[in-house]
Image (cartoon, rainbow, N blue to C red; front, side, top):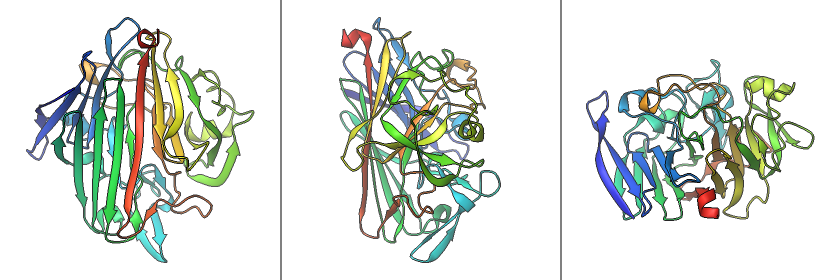
Length: 352
């Protein structure tokens, strides 16, 4: 394994953005940038041994400074939505920026962790990014310190280790917002990808994508991915939940909760022979089918269309800080936030 460091570009404030590439013996590689602690590229072998970049993203800094789809981003302090852009801890209310539908908060607001340059330290097969978040940052209480460590193995496993501490009770619910196309970024749509999610239920949402509080069985619905099926197979069904979000953009209630790191989902492309398994210790997994992908051109000038990629985001349930029956993403003062999610890549070549 080797880690190399190079200049990726210059941010609009004049600061240098650095890229870190972790490469294994077969040439597989992940590239990270300190801007947003972003996972910029993931090159893994297909069934013919050819490397394909499976992560949507950009080749330069400038589009990451807008990054409307959050390609590859580390999201914090809270991933997903908070209703009314406000929450309470121990009876005290905290207000955030309403950056979705004029009233709710998405991914912590317009000044999220994905828009900041993190400190970075490279190891032999990993890069550790650290960030200080001041008291009141994005509306959250407490002086907080975060670390996100990416490692990459000879077996094509990306391990993401999130850590955090704070001097006040606060919300911590980080996630990674990579979009995957197992045929390669810029190589068409993902509707024919197979997907399996190890979840018997999902959290229903209203027309603003805020959970209603109901946990609904996937049985007999388009949300039943307990057996692998094509992403597009049931996406066109007449269903209020799909209508509310313009397609799949829902949190799945993972089976075998509180059992530590376990398999949450698996995706596969028959065309490339590449499969992706997600392991996590988190209670939820947001499956987003790229219903509103838009914005600047992607890598190599590729035009990313709707459904050009899909995201599988490990997390606490959306709006869980406000939902009385959901597990709270609150870390008490002096306690440690500590969670791991892995993305495991395999190819038909390896399996055979």
